[in-house]
Structure formats: C-alpha cells, structure tokens
Length: 222
Image (cartoon, rainbow, N blue to C red):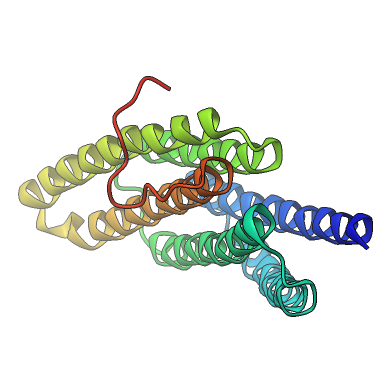
C-alpha cells in the first residue's frame, strides 16, 4: 500500500511539473509578444491558459483524494499540502502571463515608447526563479529554495527601476502616459510571478525543514 502511495505522489509531482512547463511557456510567449510586437503570440498564451486551468483542477482533485483516502501524516502531509499551494501559485503565474498578453494588445496599438531592456531582464530572472523553485521542490533542496527567496530582491529592485524610469517619461511627455502605465503594469505582473516563485520555495523549505518562513525570511548563510 505504501509503495502504491509513493507512485501516486510521484504521478502528482509529474503533473505539477508539466503544469509548470506550460506556465513557463506562457511567460516566455507573453514577453516575446511584447518585445517583438507579435499579436499572434498573445493568442497562444490565451490558448494555453485553458491547459493550465484544467491541470489545476485535476491536480487539486487528486491531492484532495489522497488526503482523504490515505490520511497521510508528518512529511507526506506536508508534501500534499505544499502541492496544493504550489498548484495554486502556478495557476496564478499563468494568470500573470495572460495579464501581460492583454496589456501587450493595448501597447501594440501605439508605437513603441522605448527600447525594452529591464523588463525582459526581469522576466528572465523570474523564469529562472520558477525553474529553480520547482527543481528545489523535486530534489527537496532547501538551500536552492532559500536562494530563490533571496533572488526575489533583484526582481524587486528592477521593478522599482522600471517604475522610476517610466515615471520620468510620463513627466517629460504627457503623451507617453498611457504606454508608460501599461509597461509599469507589465513590470508589476513580472514582479508577481517572482513572488509566486518565492511562495513555491517557501513551501519547499516547509516540506524539507518543517518550518514556515513566510513573512519573516531569515537572513542566513545558505
């Protein structure tokens, strides 16, 4: 019976990874649509959202079934609880990619405001955080999870930098306000993606170390 439960958990983790891959693809497509100004890429993002939504429901139902039937204790209970939370975070990541794509559609109606440098850099960092947080989850690597939590600071710094730069554009040219605000929204969506990666990493730390570090990430040497 234990062996079968392990197989069920393995299958659940695999579904979660597939969902993460789709969410990652959505992020990449949404940013590429912004940088290359390609409307058709936003349509791909909207289409993939349905896949993520279906996966979220499927994973949640399976996790709840295992909780009810297996009544796991200790580490297995923490694992299933974390899977439910990570599942929700990944669905939110996909939502942020959709938000970015919707904003891109507005930006495509106007000429580019400026060369995009920091926003793609932010997106790349956020994607790396998502990748590392899932790797930490699979390998039960709390050190990598702690690193992801710290990497969030760099994304926050870039987000602030983007805001300040675009605020300057708006002050100098009122005609740029709408486009600048849209780019600020994109930046904030990326910052939220990084936040969800941080949430996943915090859940990994909870699984591995049995402690909750949300809201009070410790300054350690890991």
